[in-house]
Amino acid sequence: MDLTKCIRVGSLFLTLTLWVSCSDIDLTKEPGHLKPFGTGGVNKPVEEMDGFPDPENFFENYVKPTKPLKMKGAARISKAMGKWRDEYFLSLDDDLDSEVKLETKKKENRLQAVDTMTFKNFVRIYNQTEHYMVDSVPPAIRGDITIPCPLQCKQLTEHNFVDNIMWFSSGGTKSVVHTDSVDNINCLYRGEKTLYFVDPSEHRHDVLIDHPDGTYSGMDVDAVDYTKYPGMAKVEFYHVNVSAGDCIYIPYLWVHQVRSYGSNLAVNVWWHRHAKDDLDYSACNRQCNTEYTMAQAKFMGLKTIQHDPIEVRDDFMTYISNDTNFEGFKQILFGDDYDKIVVDTTYVRAFTEMFEMLDADKNGLLSFTDFKTLDNEAWRTVGELLQLLMEDMEEDFEARNIDIDPDIDPDHGAAGDSDEMDLHDEL
Ligand SMILES: *[C@@H]1O[C@H](CO)[C@@H](O)[C@H](O)[C@H]1NC(C)=O
Ligand SMILES: *[C@@H]1O[C@H](CO)[C@@H](O)[C@H](O)[C@H]1NC(C)=O
Ligand SMILES: *[C@@H]1O[C@H](CO)[C@@H](O)[C@H](O)[C@H]1NC(C)=O
Image (cartoon, rainbow, N blue to C red; front, side, top):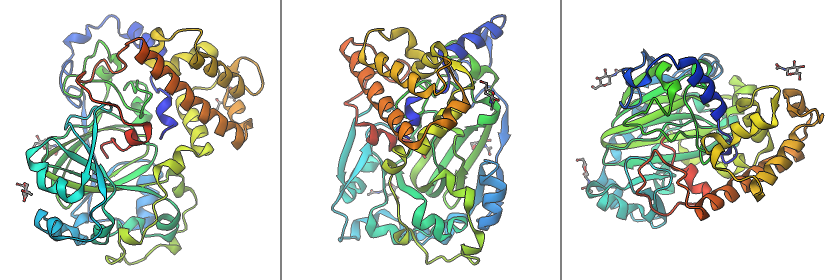
């Protein structure tokens, strides 16, 4: 995710194109202008079923075609469903002394301050504060969460689980609009959530993901400004509500925005998006085992995929069109900061070096053929250059006092490091 985060899906170039094609329409008159994300466009339903599908049905009909799915009542098989009350959390004494990471504002702002405190201290105060726990499930209570039935395959639980996150607050949280580079099942144990999705195969370039730090959009989710995000005027949404006891599958690359209502507690599992490619269903549990819990799974951690050269390559293949020239690549990479970059800086030099590396046949164009020629070592270097470049750019912007997050609440605290930022993802 660290690597995806540096590549901006929507380029300034695309914005200009859209402007030209929409120039005869007054976007400020469109129904969703300055309204919450999800308002204005068509709302389509997300497919639903009762309980979990089996692994083959799930992977063949939802994961491979990348279709979201609501699984009603599926979370009820976990002990957590009845057991996870605050009195229970407060009665635990072992293993809960380690600190958990907390967001400090319910309206997500990736530049907000991150707090830490012990899990039990968080439980004591969260009803009175804005604190939002976004961190792995404390090990002492992982045994209360059954591994979602369609994921009960050793190939997944031992080699492809990336991370789990507990999303815990008194409700009223609003995530930014973003995408993830992993597949995701999120189960809700308390409260309600509402999600809006945008299918990337229909509208990838209409939702401008203009932030390098975390593949997210800087748009204000409470008031989407169509003059800044003109593509939003034609977006169609998928809309779904989930309640305590339900689970939702959020496919890799689907744009999503999440709000929570009422005391809220959810746990999700992220798994490697390539796991689907060679999954052997005969090695999965045929009968779902409710005693097979998160305590028995191995999570490789987000860092491992952030530094995986295959991930870097996939990200480039996703976000960059075939035969992109130097200028086009610059516009994609720097997105809405394009007009603020300074030519003779370390990051622009790193950028030039990266372009030369990616242009394997040296014809001045980045093509998928070039990308296929490069070996893992080259992609590793590209990933490192990308990270350095973004860090240098942020430093330069900070030194010049340029606000890199103009649309989001400017009242922000200290930025966490980039790895922490990935954990700020809602879902
Ligand atoms: C917080 O609020 C919820 C919902 O009202 C309640 O169930 C819970 O017990 C409260 N927790 C604490 C520690 O007061
Ligand atoms: C979600 O819930 C809201 C509030 O109850 C309701 O207005 C909306 O129609 C629901 N959406 C779906 C897709 O069920
Ligand atoms: C990409 O462009 C090259 C020409 O530079 C062409 O040969 C190739 O077929 C194109 N690939 C795709 C997937 O469009």
